[in-house]
Structures are given as C-alpha cells and as structure tokens.
Image (cartoon, rainbow, N blue to C red; front, side, top):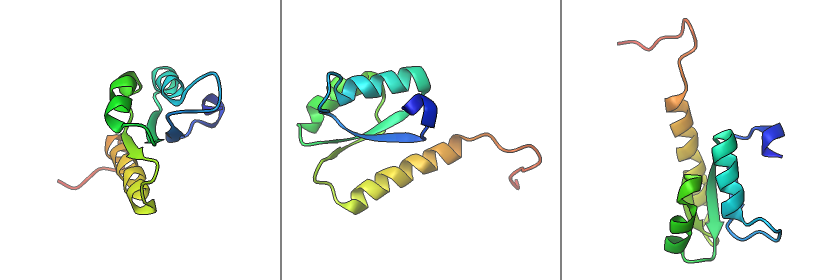
Length: 95
C-alpha cells in the first residue's frame, strides 16, 4: 500500500495482527521507499527502539500518548521534511 500511496510518514503500532509485525513493516518501508515511521506502542519503548533501529523511526510514543504529543511528533516530522526539501528553481531565500 505504501508503494502506491507514497505517504510522507507512517504511524504504526509495533504489534500488528498479521504475520508481519510493525517493526518489520517499518524496516521494509524505510529501506525500500525511504518512508519513516512514528511508532505507537504499549511495549517498553527502550526495547522497541533497540529492535527498530534499522527502520530509522522518527519517534516512538506510548500508545496512550495525548493527541498533542502525537500532533507534535507529526509536525516535527513535517518540519524536518520541509527543511530538507530542495528549493524550487527561482525561489531563493534572502541572505
């Protein structure tokens, strides 16, 4: 699905109800498509980060994070993408 839709990011649970867990799916989407993940989990965040380092997750939040915490993570990721985007030809920043 990510290959067709090309989202900027994926928000995923670490534990999915399929044969592939969230860490494996995120690792694939990062390596194949360059799409990073914000993980939501009820697991110990430290253990998730250790397992997920190949996926290069942008953030790992507790599943009970507030809407504001998730919003901050998403906005921080968007800001990072905007800062990394090349300038459009003819659109330069003032020195």
